[in-house]
Length: 223
Image (cartoon, one colour):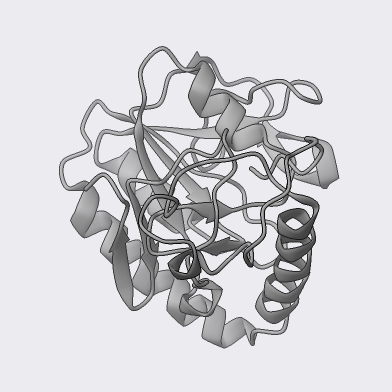
């Protein structure tokens, strides 16, 4: 989600500590400075490293708690299109949740990278459907129909209490949301260790409606 390739103006304060900037600046999207881009890169590398170091059994237990929270939050999903993702680099594994949602009437889907710098598309998929290998060798639906999600569940590399999400830096997710004719319910998922101090969002960043971790539900700025 981070558009680190942009050429931004300079900004004097630390890129993450919005409380230093005053109320007029807090949460207002801007272009990223070199300092902000460097901070995002450092935090991205640190957080991914910490996530990769988690014990498999510990992750499985946390993933189950995330799934329980999501089931409670989503409620009746009959007829709704719910997109999640295929887990990558120890992201929370929500495939069992997708199976549960499909059994309860949801149309479940996965995102597909079409081309560099282009929005993602969403294809219907449920457990047992054929998969192909895409970017970074991540599986995606080989034959599913393209759908428009009512609910998008996306992993975070990091997040803050305003609902802003630190991603891998490609910008796919935010471009995708901006291109949709109607904004879906946006839910980020991650582990509690990924919570960051408030950080300055980029002008293209779109906040999550909520971010779900094993131990909390963090409401976005608009809720």
